[in-house]
Amino acid sequence: DQQVKQNSPSLSVQEGRISILNCDYTNSMFDYFLWYKKYPAEGPTFLISISSIKDKNEDGRFTVFLNKSAKHLSLHIVPSQPGDSAVYFCAASAEAAGNKLTFGGGTRVLVKP
Amino acid sequence: DVKVTQSSRYLVKRTGEKVFLECVQDMDHENMFWYRQDPGLGLRLIYFSYDVKMKEKGDIPEGYSVSREKKERFSLILESASTNQTSMYLCASSPATGTAIYNEQFFGPGTRLTVL
Image (cartoon, rainbow over the protein chains, first blue to last red):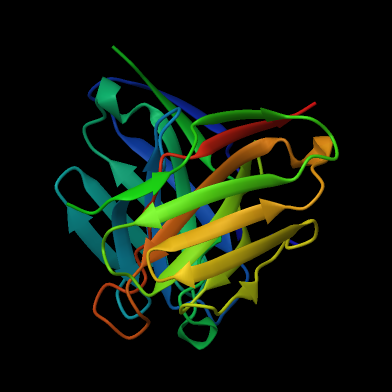
């Protein structure tokens, strides 16, 4: 059973608008959450993270929100740019499990000019 | 600059062949990981290693083995390749648990393996 789920396999957004990617998790032991971005034929690259003691983390155009009670996090990209077109993976880790990351299935984002 | 390299970008093998996938990192990281990526399933952990000569099973270890003889190198071995092992294989590394950025893993470019 997938402990981290990204229920939207794809998302299409107009350039300049907001992209919102969602991620749900089931394991209450997860205490750190990360977003990775992946272009075709490349490895994933780290984008932004958030600790479970926070509810928001912002880095430039990227903001991650965490709702612990709902076991839900989201990534906002504002404004979206064509270079943001990629697959985005949500990942979670638990200190008790060491440095293992559990990944969601990914959301493919297409930003249209 | 952080770098994880994988020996091949594309590989085609036949069913039953023994396959070696090599991964090298130059960041002196203690932790190394092997994942496979399949559409809709995200990245699934096959094996990982916290130290030289040490290995632990991930979520889907069946059909795979690993070797870590040196700190910088982590090899994934398919003892007898099967068609259901056709996938993108990704290697990653990270600093030791407990350091400031221990959660972040650095990935190689991946190896697209096709088993015929």
